[in-house]
Every structure is written in C-alpha cells, then in structure tokens.
Amino acid sequence: MKIKQSPTSAVKSGVFIGTLNFVMSPAKKITKPLHRHYHHKYHGKYKHAKKIFIFDMVLVAAATALLATSLYFFFIKPQENFLNISLKQNQKIKIGETHDLTFQLTNLTNQPLSELSVKFEFPASFVIKSSPPKFNPETKTLTADLLKEKEALNLPFQGAVFGAINETQKIIIHAQFREHKNQTLEEQIATIDLNLSEPAIAVSLETPETIMVGQNFNIIVNYKNNTLSNIEQIALAPTLPNDLAIVSNNAVLKDGFWILENLKPNQSGQIQLIGFLRSKPSSGSIALTLQTFLANGKEKHLQTSLIKYSTVIDNGLNLSANPINDKNYLKPGEETTVEIHYQNKTGQTLKNINFNLNLPTGLTGNTTQSTKKEIVPEETNTVEFKIKLAENFDAGAITSAGLALRPFVSFYMADKHLQKSDKLPNIGLIGL
Image 1 (cartoon, rainbow, N blue to C red):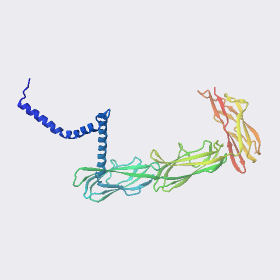
Image 2 (cartoon, rainbow, N blue to C red; image 1 turned 135 degrees about the vertical axis):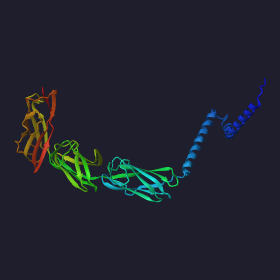
Image 3 (cartoon, rainbow, N blue to C red; image 1 turned 90 degrees about the horizontal axis):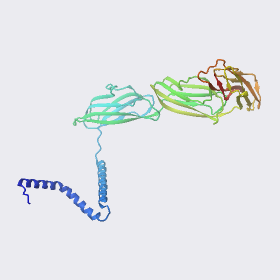
Image 4 (cartoon, rainbow, N blue to C red; image 1 turned 45 degrees about the vertical axis):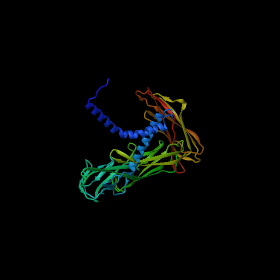
C-alpha cells in the first residue's frame, strides 16, 4: 500500500535532507580521502586493520596538535612589559645590618600610567626601619597618581634582613595601573632576590693543637659585630667534651648558649675558658664545636658553624679504682673502703700529690688524702678511701640506686700543675 505524502511534509523532508547534506559536506570531504586511504593501505592487509588505522590517526592528530602549539609559542609576540621594576642597590646582603633599599619603577611606554598602586610582600624576617611617605605599613601598599612616559619612580626603604647564611629572601612587588588610552586595569609582578651572603658576626675558635690530660688549657672565642648597625642579641652555642672540667670562665652558659647583647657597630670581644681534661678519650682526640646564631625576637638564625680538633696525650699517671672486699652494696650506716691504684709512667718524679674523692649526697667519709709528697718514676701503690652511707639515707620509693665515683689526683710535674681522674665502678646503694 502506497502512502501519500502531503506537499507540506514533502517540502519539510526535502529541506531537512538538504540542510543535513550541506552541514555534512565538509566532513564528507575529509572522510572520503580517509576512507580511500584505509581501503588502500589497511583493509585486508592486517588482522586488526581498523584498530591499527584508528591508532595511527590518533598519533597523527597528536603530532599535529603538538606542532601547532610549538609554532604558536615560537611566533607569538611576547607580552610587553609596561614597567621595569628593579632594586638599585647590590642584592648581596649582610645579615642583620640596616641597608638602604631603593625600589625603582620605570614607565617603559610612551604614554602615562595612572592610578598606580604598588603592594610589597616582604619576608617575615625583613624588619622595616624607614619607608616612603605614602607607604601604608599595615597593608604594605603605596599609591601614586600618575607616572609619566619614560619616568622613573624611586621608593626608598631602610631595613634589615634576618636569616641563615647563604639563604635567599624574596620580596614580591605587585604593581597595578591603567594605561592612558586603555582604561583596563593592568597588573605587573616582579620578584627581587636578596642574597644573604655575609654573616652579621665574625667568630673564631682557638684551642691548642695538643692537649695533655690534666693540664690546664685555654679555649678562646673571638667575636666581632661585622655590621654597621647595632645588634640586639647574638647567641653562641658551644659543644664541649663531657670530660672537660672548667676551672674558670668569663661568660656563663644559659640553656646551652652564651648570650651577647646590644653589640655596637664593629664592637669586638672575647670569651675565655680555662679547663683541663680528666682523662684521655679512646679516640685520642677531642672536637670542640661552636655555632653562631643571630636572634630576631624569639627566632634564632644560624650564621656560622666552627669545629676544632685537638690531639690528646696522656700525662703518664695511670689510675684504677675498686671497692675492696667486694663490698659493692651498702645499707644505711654501712661503710666500705675504696682503693685507688696508681702507677707513675711519666718518667719524672711527681711532687705535692693530692688524692681526692668527691662524694655524692648521702655518702660520708674522707675525701682527701695528702700523705704523699712525691711519687718516683715507675712507682706503683694504692691509696685508700673509707666511705659510709648516711644513717638517715632515705631513697623514698627507690629501693636501690647506683653511684659512679670519680677520684682526682693533682700533682706537679716539671713545674706544670696537672690533674688526672678516672671513673670508679658503680657502687650500689640500698636505701631500705
């Protein structure tokens, strides 16, 4: 049965098909060559001809897109800068010193720039000492009405930068403005690098190359304010050997630091320690280190790190010690005897010998033996110390504890006053 179409629907159908053919005609012009290429090069020649063809087309499309992107960025005209933003001074900074920093904004265009607003992003460790008149310290912004063509605007600051040596601090500058002809708001951003290349304080550490056990020696720290500004606080952190006994010093450590305050420009000074080593370390040498910190409020910024090595030689007096009768544990009121064994290997006669045993809290007894006037070379002998646990010794919740005792011997050898010590085995204390 034949269905008759109305003239109106026939017209509509023809218009639709014609429009579709018109729209699809460019696509057909592309797909026909691809269709011929597929049947000529792929169809019937490969097992998965359609998949290989599609994969090749994807590769060609990707390569074409990459080439087009490369050509675009190669030939595109770079965006023109309206301003040149720079720092007039040297960007190498001495840490902690007040510097003149003049930021210059130069109009590179041939027309005025209006409604100029400059915002600074300073690092947290940057301390502003002075700024331009129109600078708002709260918002860190500055405004100017007009910057004429080729005109330069200088923005002078004074400030100090704190940080670690060889660190780079960045100042970011945002400039907003309008071109005279083009009323759109433009923005330009610049980054200024400040290289912290020189420490605020010059420090040196002096120790002897060779140290004899028991002989006093000097540890000298020289320091100098290396800036043209007042420095509020410098902290020096030494690391000293555990077996070092300090005889005298002209500076006191506080929480592991020597604190130097209110140093004037180019002010110098010296810290001196006098001490001796109680015994020779197994390595045969000691290392003394010193770190320098510049304080900015509660923050401390590392400036320098120094290390000095010294060779340690024995003085030839050998010591050993132990409790006699194997009395290694004491109850309140009990006593024991400790023997100090010595042997003179110095090759010289030792004079004015004092044997000392410092007793911790809770122990009583004789602490000094001074009966020996001299010890001849190769002499071997013992000195006895009687120690007693206090009658009212109360360990509280602790039923036992251990104490390490250390005997000292002081003597003169070839007009040199020496001191030697050694560690005793632990003596156990029973408090209940």
